[in-house]
Image 1 (cartoon, rainbow over the protein chains, first blue to last red):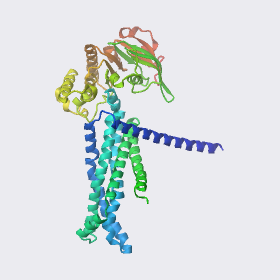
Image 2: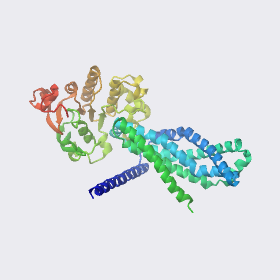
Image 3: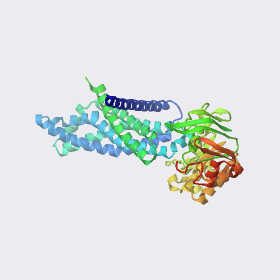
Image 4: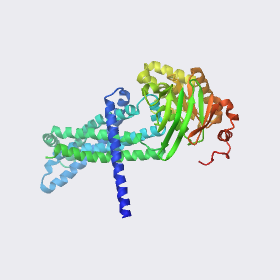
Length: 261
Length: 248
């Protein structure tokens, strides 16, 4: 009986701990968003974050999209050949990339690159007392560090997803034309004929949500980093894991919202 | 005047401050001494509101520091952090002029740069250092930049957290002299925490000894050597035996 009580106690403590963490992250998110409505707004920091998160993530997102588009074309061709549906390659590549793979893989790549760097940077600032220094210099760290990064990621990731869509479709095109004997005109024609605006827009909305999650997790874990190099390391790992899991979970919820019959 | 009245602070089961009472009159330099981990930094951060104390009162000119306009309150302070706490991503001059580039004290960029260079000169750094990044400077130079940042907006109150830690004796002497000169010429109220006795004698008007979460002794620096307090005596003479356990 004691063992059962102890086990239940531990389970309860774990659940309470998890709920408390969810509460803390939610409060952090609300605080961040409310700062958007109150001055000052640090435009220089925002511009810097936009370059770091958006522009400098372009190569990694582009490469991911290019190879994913190519691999997708090969897979769909091989799968489609089982029931003589090889011609669907261009349209499925386009729909699959814009609705799902573009935003999800792009989001995960940005999580790996950006959530880690934000958490490490802010975590290091915390352990070296730079966050305290900001406060003593009458500068709110949430406004100066968190808001510009979260806003920049929320705006930049959808654009990255959009560019990734184009590059991914080009990857499928190159494989389709070069390896699978599609005519260039036919491939592009099939792609554009079956692709709808909502396919692209829904993927970009997903990108905005994923961008928000990535930067929020990076900032949250950085701000709550433990002491020393180990603390910063743990914060960085936790930020990437949390951002990745939340991207996948929110992707399912958004897909249900957008596309369930 | 800064007053701490029966201030308590605990982190979990670790009771760090157990009723600190301390008064720092305006325009004087108070140095708080005590061993590592005795809560000196916590007391200082409680005054600034970086850590919220559990009970007791902290008053600045008679007003509770937890009430009132926080920005106006912080605008009265300058702080030199132990490790400098310079912003790695900003060049030296922007670190120094941080307060003048944003917020209520904002000045035109060129003017802020000029003031920063003047403050750098005041702490013995050449204008050529202004465009470097903190990582390109030595530890002593970083401390000086931190000092220049602390005084840039000409605050009424300046806090120094372990100003000479990690510096060689000559550089420590330079920093001590600078602090003394600057505090005197600005007429500022200063609160320094350190366990470097050379710093104490160079900087302090008054000294307070923090041990076991309470102030064990406080008085003018001139009376420190004849205090008759066993805790203070052991500390200032660096004895391994006495009322303070050597292993904490």
